[in-house]
Image 1 (tube, rainbow over the protein chains, first blue to last red):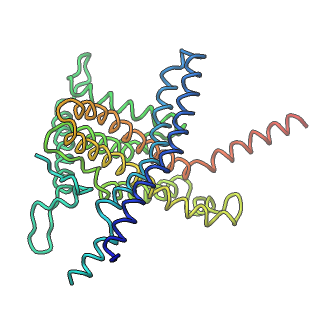
Image 2: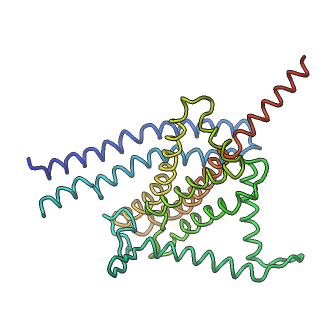
Image 3: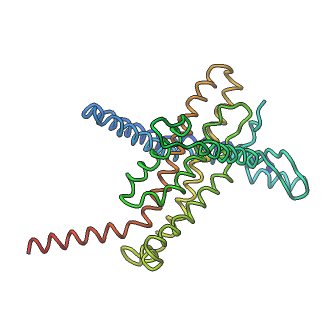
Length: 92
Length: 245
């Protein structure tokens, strides 16, 4: 197997794994956050506005962990530095 | 027509004009468009300000934005909120405008390029010591790095860099992933679902602008006010001890 297909296989498998494993943690975290926010709103409906605002900010911050994984998979698939290195080596 | 092709991850790669070493890419064009829009809008609105009982409709908009940002800052720092207002407000307005304009066809948010978000994060990175030194003085500011003791110095320095990176990648990742999702959906199920995702994108853009501004404010506040709070706590502790004795 030449180095092109090795790099391609490794990048694609790693991109999929990165997304799959990296989204487990944030999914659990978001579930817990929404759960406790919902029960707090049920207990204190008057505080709904500030609870919702804090919930959204917290969700976006948890989500950013999954977004980091997504960025890495996108880089692996679309802007892979190793891939371009090998292309250049083969071309020049 | 898509400006950014589906296999390009940032508008930096879309080169509109090249002359020698001068390269004009889509990020630059749209950044200047957003800046021009903000400056021209502010100039036009502030030309006809009034203090009477009825104010112009656009002045009302600006006042709502300004007082909203100011009250958010007041919730984080107790005093001196107005000294942070220009920097935080500028960050918020720029990111908000460039995120919300994505519903215009042919527009690509400059915040979906890593170069723009890195520039904004670097601005926050330098604003933290500038505000900290101007509020506390240079010696007190540097002492913060050795609190609670000298072992924590490398962790403080590492934290400064890693949070700057996180700030840049968070904004870039959210906006870029949103654009990619819409591009993929347009290819798979055209017409309806991309519109729903666009509507969701407005919410994402608003929340990300809010989070960027709030985090920048929290970082600046932690550098310029942390010591005052410990001082204050110590004073109250002393008072309670004196009262008790």
